[in-house]
Image (cartoon, rainbow, N blue to C red; front, side):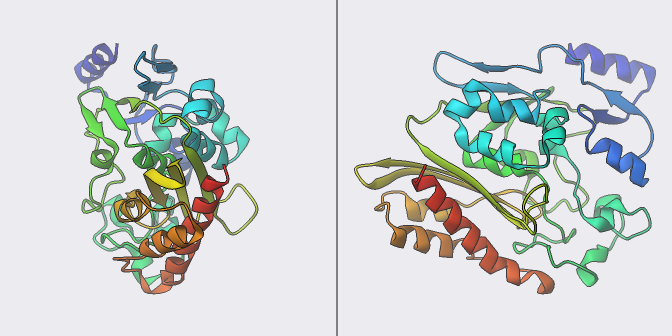
Length: 311
């Protein structure tokens, strides 16, 4: 189906931005930073299901709503960290309308990008206006280019789960979807015309403890300052496996492998959690106005760890 549609578009000379739920795309069109043709895929057959294979591997179609990811029996029961993150972002209305795939591919929420008259490397300008302007909620692991952090909550959650991505052209890791942040004009590395079709989750870990927490400036419905998804497997008082994905801190979602290493094999104690959370700040190179977020990162991780062990 996808191949047929792609060939038909090419034959007609139609190229444009892909619309699924449209919650990001319509905002950009209204703001005047996107224009031109739209390729609407929201009615494509077969991309709106969550299915689990006999070995436990789970496939989530790109057109599944964020609300469904948060509340479906398979995801809520077997991948509760992902489900908690899905239920914790945006508003109920957005979660009902927005697609899972679209949440991974949305464009930066930086005000310099969203304003048609301000300078932004994501719009092809040579200079990021936020670097010399307002970047108080900017990056603390700076990859250059844009000063603002990546907007995808679920991208960080999928890194914690070591998920994979299927597109109309290939099978890649979530890390490969986002790259290393060096391509400053892009929020993801899909090619023009390439369609994200499915997310593949590995078999679930029985009895794992999970949590999602976002530090925000108001009670709800706010973009995160720092956010974290944590998975912990605990046996006989020892942490036997860990997954830690964070957002709000870099131009790409990050998997904190150094923090995971400090957790695995250690006693599930407050001392272990504090030591691992402190290590999250290693390698931070924050923009001047965002230095305060380094402490916020450490505190957010510690809170999320504590919530996971209490799960």
